Length: 432
Ligand code: ADP
Image: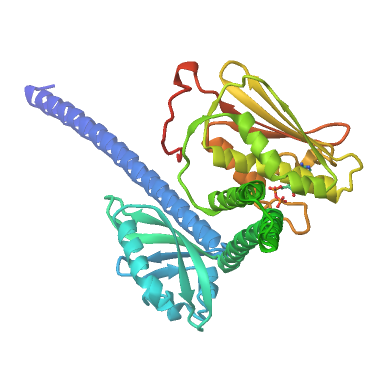
């Protein structure tokens, strides 16, 4: 072969090599392109999956909201209703979505509630989650009470774009509440009236005796003066009696005044034995009338307590009256009330009022101190609740027990005065 043909041959080989290299590069590029295409397709599938899932979620969410029995709605800052579910339509008495969507929510808010409603919307759009109530007048003029739980809805950048509100009709609840409130006001009124009535009856009883005695003694004096044969010294005794009876009547009046007057508690180092004796005396007549006996078992040298004497007297008086009533109502054969006092530990004094009445049902023992709890046909259920708040405002405690053999026992304790303080009288409010 000549040199020429060698050169051609070499050229061809080189060309072949270059071509092969080009082909390989092409094949690699095609492969990469296919991979890239595959990746794009995968991404598209993935994207579609995300879109499908999003759509599915939205459908599910919508289905939930649509079937939600409560009203779910979106509102713009100016009060325009953006969206509402079928329950919401029913709540505002709208027949079609257009009746309320795109309209201001204020068209169903009662005029007197509009201002506060606006303020609540302002607070939600400032980022607060709120629960508020308002009176609504529906599109068909029905009046009802609504309660809305409202939260702000934010976009991806965190800006608040709507209020999401869940609203329900609370009219029945509101009416029931109103009824309970009215009932309680009525009971409180009855309590006041019946306390006043009781007091008036008690007062009549208590005053009758000294007044009758005063009239008798005075008439006796007049008779003797008229007859002319009386030495002035002989009139001193009956006139002293007149004075004593008038003082007794004055004492009764003081009790009534103290009971009626609304006063700040005045704490003083108080002798509970003395108070118990006073209560026993004050209830003497009623106890006798109900064929009951009141026994005192008072600890000698009882430490004094920091207490408002009038208020503590009211507590012991309430407990004694409850015992008398319980024994009378149950027609107990043995009617005995015992008031005991004793030191309890080093720094408290305990007062116990026990009776031989029917006792208290074990299931009710925790309720007897509740306001308005009563088992009496004419009862009001305020006595024990007032007693407990008095004892507790003194920093003490009160409890009830019912003995197996019948009878109820109420026990309360008050803080004893430390020895060196006992001679000092302090005056301060015990309201907490
Ligand atoms: P009220 O006397 O108006 O019923 P209270 O608060 O004084 O109100 O008493 C509540 C209830 O506690 C009474 O109705 C009664 O059932 C019960 N109770 C109170 N004291 C006694 C007692 N000594 N024995 C039996 N039950 C009592």
